[in-house]
Image 1 (cartoon, helix red, strand yellow):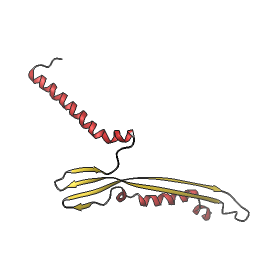
Image 2 (cartoon, rainbow, N blue to C red):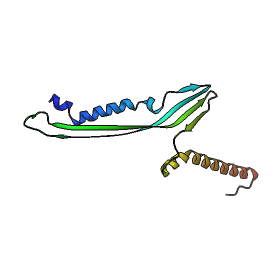
Image 3 (tube, rainbow, N blue to C red):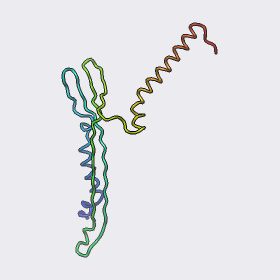
Image 4 (cartoon, rainbow, N blue to C red):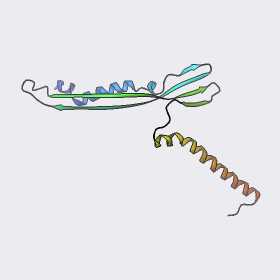
Amino acid sequence: MEQEKKNSLGELMKITMEHIKTMADANTIVGTPIKAEGVTLIPVSRMSFGMGGGGTEFTTKQYPNQNFGGGSAASAKLEPVAFLVVREDGSVKLLPVAPPPATTVDRVIETVPEVVDKVTGFIEKQQEKKAQKEIDGDFVE
């Protein structure tokens, strides 16, 4: 019974996941800060991984208790995405190092902060115009 437990598909997958877990710690994604001349650079990366496994149970006359065959595999990819630049005066800037977005979804995600700023600015201008009309007496409901 102990032999079956050591060679089960679940055990193979568990060992594979443990190895992936050691690769994907927080220091892998958000790197160790680098300090130089009043500026701190913090590397930020994207990690993706895939995992697969399979197995089969069989018996033979020669090995009636060793009835498992299987394997598992994993792959990981680490891509630098940006540097977080922190200056002594407290300003923070994200400096991307990745190539331009490749898909429409990537472009939308990248431009969301700009769109939010533009929409917020437009709403604020509209509210200012409305408030000014109320002050001038031009406001009509």
